[in-house]
Structure formats: C-alpha cells, structure tokens
Length: 376
Image (cartoon, rainbow, N blue to C red):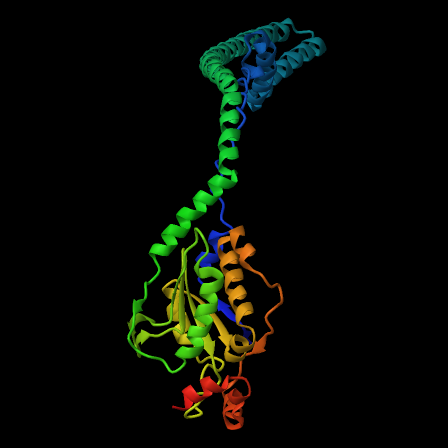
C-alpha cells in the first residue's frame, strides 16, 4: 500500500544525477609478433636421403606380386629336377638339358634385379624432385613470412615507444573526466537536455476551491526555496497543463514548482469532496493522470491535507530533499533547517474514503476559516 508523501519522477531524471562521462578505452599494450614456424623437418634436404630410403624400401615391398616368387621358383625346380635325373640315369643329355634352364633362371633373376634397381632409382629421383619442389615452396613461404615478421617487429617497436605517451595521454584524459567540475558540467548538459523535453504549463484563470491551502503551502515553499540565491524558483498556484488526451483536456495542479532543471506537481490530497462526500484520491484514482505527467517529464509529490496543515515546513523540506536527490547539489542540504521526519500516512481506499466522508474527518484538522471557505 502506498503511503504519503507519494513521490514519482521520470526514471531518466534519477539516472542523470548518478551518470558519469563515458570512460575511454585504455590503450592496449603492444603485442609482440611471433616469429614464423621453421621449414618442416621432412623437407630439409640434409635428412632427405635417409627418409627416402626408408620410404623406397616400403614402396618396393608393396610392389612384389605373385610372379615375383613363382617364376624363379619354377626355374630352380626344373634345374634341380634335371640334375637328379642326370644323376640317377647317368645320362649327360639330361644335365645338358638342365643347364639352359638354369641359365635362363639366372638371366631372369639378373634382369629382374636390374629392373628393380631401375624402378628404385626412378622412384628415388621422383621423390627427390618432389622434395626439392616442396623445399623451394616452403623456403619461399618462410622467406615471405620472415619479411612480414620483420615488418611487424618494426611496427611493434614503434608502438612500444609510443605506448608510454599514449598511456600518459589516457591518464590525463581520465583525470579530466573524473574531475568534479567536469562531471558537474557533463550532468548540467544532460539536465539542460532533459529540461527542454518538459511540457511547460500555462497560466489559468480558473479558481479552485482549495486555493487557500495551496497558497498557504506555496508561501512556505517560497520562504524556504523561492529566494535561494543563484537557484531561483517559480511557484504557481494558478497554472495548468494542456493535455488534450482522451477525457483530459487540461490539468490543474495545486502547486507547480519550477526549479531548474525540474518541474514538480505538488498535490494536497483530501479523501473526499467536502460539499458532496464523493471519494477522491483513493488507491488507483490518480494513476492515469500521473502516467501522463511522467510522460511529459513532470515530477509528482503528494501530501495529505493533514500533513500540510500540521507540518507545512517539514513538507517544504521534503520537497527540497527531493530536489537534492535528483540533482545531488549540496546547496539544497543547507536549506533543510529541520531534520524531523514527516509522519507518514497510508493512502486510503475508496471504501475508507466513504467512511471518512461519513464521519466528516476533515473537520478534525482543517482550520475553521478554511472549513468556512469550503462550505460556501
């Protein structure tokens, strides 16, 4: 449940007093470039021959097929068979017959070995040429990377020399941004922008039935804050705000306090209309108009009649305290003469307003001259 005094304000206004200038990013420390990776070990020509020999042996073993073993095997078997027949039969023609077969087997092995060596040599040359090309390619890439590395290193050394100067400038700029004078100037610019967005009220000739109590509080406000040197205020009890939105054509605040950079609608709420007993200002009664006022960047402070009648000066100090909280200007604290807290009152419901109207509770605290004014 809401309690009086009820205070509402645009969120953007509350943020201004705690806003600081945007801090620049700290200059990053220069990053030292990394040297390029060396040429892969496999493509170093000094170690190429041993690597190729290992690969050549594996390659040759993989190329041996069935004929490699069958053909010489048959030759040797025929040769042995011829020798055995010649030995058992003592026939020289069988031995002579075996010798050509044996010679063919030897020639077959000779040519096969020669072809194998040639294949190995071709394979070695092919691998070597490939290695040479790859080595040249990696060497050129490495030289290119080294070129860019040396270039980056020069840039790094230059940045390193300038880093101290940049960090010094950064600290000076940061010190300037954190200076109280600069922060105050920065916030003043935000307040100025905020003030230009506020819908300005107009003067109204319409007389309100509660003008006496409103003028009473306005006079007390003027006494405490109206003549503050360097911080002028304008206090109105005859102002209105043109709305022209839905059922609202114009709104007539009890008191309008212009105090740069804010405009405050100060309301003095009563639970019912004295002449008719109609409940007003109960929970939810002011929601629509308050939403409209906040959209127009107005602030709202609501007191009860009882608070204004019994504690008028403390109500004024509450307004000054609010201005200080929005602007964080220490000057306003010096205007608060009494630190006594304003007694709170819960906001009434519609049913409670009917009961207060029935009991005529306003007669218990309103001055007699004001009651007489209300009864006219």
